[in-house]
Image (cartoon, rainbow, N blue to C red; front, side, top):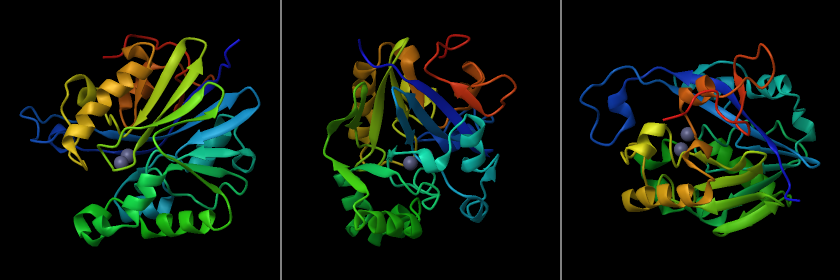
Length: 266
Ligand SMILES: [Zn+2]
Ligand SMILES: [Zn+2]
């Protein structure tokens, strides 16, 4: 029997913006198109794992992002004690995915080798590229590396039975997506390979991009890894929170994406 896991998308922050900011070349309609910020929990089969760690209140306010609730609180609402998290997959090192680094004292961090090479390499000499990284996050990850708490992967790797990472690049050099086996089939947590359903479904890239061809190729990889388009979970789309069942009755900021959506997603 294949292992099956539960997955929660936990929203921790929000940013109002219009559509022209979310596509290369803008958007002629330019209506409201806000971003949500999530971390994802993967539990079951004795596993207590996260995808990404979000940012904290100080980083959020410095960057003008509205914290909905601290990541720690959101995790506790879905029954996760940060101290019990054993493994954290970091999709990439951008500030909104790799902060809160003191919160998980036991966790091992799973990263693509190429992502750390990128965010400590010559690309960071350019202010426009390093602006989406926090030096403190990169420094903290190097600290974890030197205490034996970082596991590097190159391309595809199995993290546990039924959980694997896949480097897709595109948005950043070493961006990885996560494939998780659930009762409804193979779910793909796309993180910033697809900020919004619209970036992916309409093949219109988000403006922060390392390689446009690699970014566009990533969509084919995601589609090949997921059981269906209804099994792909974009990284920043408010439609995820609106389309999936609450993780527990009354919870406003956490949904179960291992369960089928309540209504078809785009
Ligand atoms: Zn990113
Ligand atoms: Zn992001």
